[in-house]
Image 1 (spheres, rainbow, N blue to C red):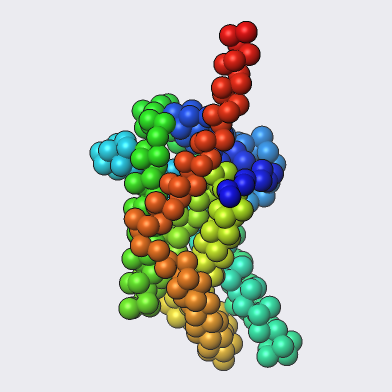
Image 2: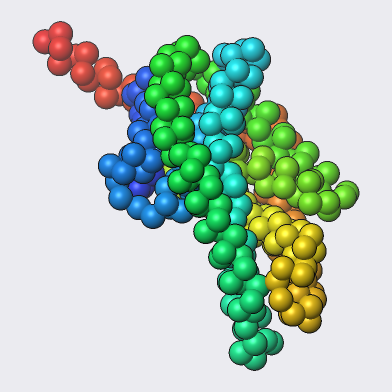
Length: 327
């Protein structure tokens, strides 16, 4: 028998609520993401500049996941316009994030192979990557005022929310979009298995991220089961994200190796990158093999069943409220 336990979550603002229509839930979820981004960009919530960049980009990705969820309901033209709006809004801060992940990727790699390196450091390489990050901060954040530009894009986006979040309160308003996202992630996985190029692996990662955010929105329909799916998708995305960061680091090192000091250090680091990327890709493929067992239509139908049972929970309470109101 289906039994739902209500689990508290710190991410409840990015979830549906029982007895809240999709017409109310979708704009609420989007506005909350814009509010969170605005708080860090304008300094209302004090975080480091790198954290602000990360939060803004994450908020944009979540909103684009919502767009994909309601895409069949709002139509291709509206979807394309709004998706382009948010994609372009995130672009000015992408360079900052890219510079940051190079330093983080190096740190994760050296920690992973700490015993094999036996105390050998890559101080010259790390120092150059940090210098590059400082230069990007100065150019993009200080001279180009990217935070102010991003904050303006938030204000503009808020004025358009109503135009694309007015969706009907029925499963098909989100079910078809979920199926399309799942299919896109599944096909991207298959493409990456056939050809593990950097581009294919990155596309797989992006699609998994969108799917993970959509599953988070749907978490309340059956928290225990949805948590399993969310955690699996999240782990897959983390593995693929680490792989992509190392791919970018490899490209940076091979593009201008003379900038990073000793050639022997660069060659050793490139060998470690290759080894670690092989591990990450293998772990991700093992997860995906299980995760993508369902065909897209079967996956959607399963979650539609969860949704239907969840909706049934509201009916006894609604009837009781009506009874009390009429007495």
